[in-house]
Image (cartoon, rainbow, N blue to C red):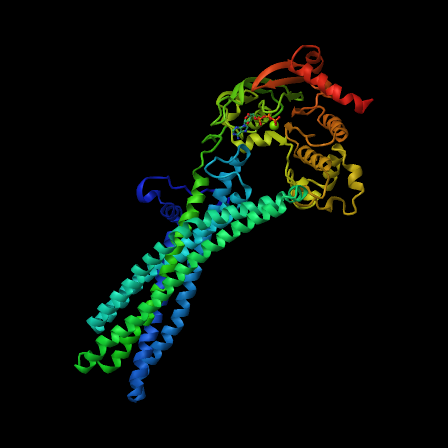
Length: 602
Ligand SMILES: Nc1ncnc2c1ncn2[C@@H]1O[C@H](COP(=O)(O)OP(=O)(O)OP(=O)(O)O)[C@@H](O)[C@H]1O
Ligand SMILES: [Mg+2]
C-alpha cells in the first residue's frame, strides 16, 4: 500500500484563526513540518553565509588596502572561500528538502481532493462548489498547486527572513549600536511596513485571481466542448467575446497584483539604500571619534546589503499568502462538501452472486426539492431476471439506478442483496456488483482497445472482439484499417452516436457485472438505429440480471417485469402483455408509440 492510499486528516473548519483556509492548509501540511524546519535552517545557513561572505570580503578589501603582511589576511581568505562554498551547499539542501517535503503533501492533497470529488460528481456537486467541469479541473490542478506556493514562497522565506534579520541586527549592533538601530529601523520598514502596504494595495486583486482563473478555465472547457453547437448556431463569436472579457479580467487582476509587487520591490530597494546611507552617517563619526576601527566601517556599511537579501522576498511572500489563501479556500470547499453517500466505517462484505436484489420502500428526497424523486419504491430482481423501468421524464428512473450504485443516499427504505443491506457495504464493492452503462457514457480520447479495457484491464484482444460482436460492432471493426488501435477522438467525436452507444455497451459487457444497469442506452439515436440497438441489447443481456431504463416500449415483451414510475411512485407493474392490456400510463404510451411507428413500419 502506498502512502497515497491513506488520506491525510482534513483539519475541521473552526472559528477564528483556525477557520482561515491558509492556516487550515498549514495544519493539513503537518507531515511536512519537520523537514520544512530543517529547510528553514538551511535557508538561514545560506543567507548567513551570504552575509558572512560580504562582511569578510569587505573587511578583507579594506584591510588589504593597508598592505599588511599576507599572513594577517590568511584566515579571512579561507573564510571567504568557505562562505562561498557553504552558501551553495546550504542553498541546495534548502531547495531539496523543502521541495521534497512539499511535493509529498501536494501529491496527497491531489489524491484527497480527487477522492472527495469522485463520489460527489455523479449526484451533482453542491451549489457552493460548482457544476462546471473546467472549474473543478482548476481546483484539482492550480488551486492545489498554490499550496506549494503557500509553503515554499510564503512561509519558508518569512521564517528564514525573520531569523536572519534578527541575527544580522545583533551582529551589527555589537559592532556599532547606532548602526544596529539604523539597520533594525530600515529592516522593519522593508520587512513589515512595505509588505503590509503592498498587500493592502493588491488585496482585492489577489482575492479575485483564483476564482477568475477558475471561471476562465471553465469557459474555455465549455467553448471547446460545445464548439460544434456554437458554430452551428452562429454563437461562436459571442462566446469568444465572452472568453476575451474573462481573459482581460484575469490579465487586469494579474497586472494589478504585479504593480503592487513592483511597488514593494522598489520600496525595499529604497530602504536598502537608506540603511547603507544611515550606517555610513552613524559609522563615519564613530571612526573619527575612534569608537570604530576604520576597517570595520566597510563591514558596517555593507552588512545591510546582505541583510536585505533576506527581506527582499517578503512583499512577494505576503502576496503569495493571499493568493494561496484564496486557492486553499476553494480546495477546502471541495474537501468540506458533505458527502452525498455515507460510507460505513467498517463495511460489510457484499454477498457473492447469484442472489436476489431487493428494493424496499425506497425514498429519495434531493435537498432543495419540494417533492421526493422516489417515494416508497419496491422492487425484487431475481438472478438472471431482466426488468424494465419506464415512465415520464423526471419520474425518478435515473435516481433509482443511482441509488442502486450508491451514488445517491436513500432518505428512507433500503436496498438489499442476498439479504445484506447494501448501505452497510463499501460503495466501491457495491459498484463491482452493479455496473452501469448510461446514456452519456464517457469515451476517452484514446484507442478502442484502451476505452474498452477500462472495464477490465487484463482483457485479451479476443475478449474485446467477443464483446464487440455481442454489441454488433464486429462488422464495423472489420472495416477499420487500424482495428482496435483506432482512436475514438475527443469525447468519441470520431465515431457515430450509435457506435458510441454500442462501444459503451461493449464496455459494460466486458466489465461483466453480476447486475447490469442500462440507462436509456438508445437515447439520441434515429428510430431505425434505436430499434436495432434495442434489439441487440436485449439479445446481449439474455440470461443476465439487468435493469434497463428505456422510453422504447416495443421489445419489452421478452422481459420478466416492467415497472412504471410516475412522480417517484410505482404506478404500474407487470409484464408487457399485462400492462398493454390494462388502462394506464403504459397503454397510453404504448399506443402513442405504435401510432408514431406505424408510418415507419408500413
Ligand atoms: N442532483 C439532483 N439534485 C436535485 N434534484 C435532482 C437531482 N437529480 C435529479 N433531480 C430531480 O429528481 C427528479 C427525478 O430525476 P431523474 O433524473 O431520476 O428522472 P428520470 O426519470 O431519469 O428523467 P429522464 O427520463 O428525463 O431522464 C427530477 O425532478 C429531477 O429534477
Ligand atoms: Mg434519466
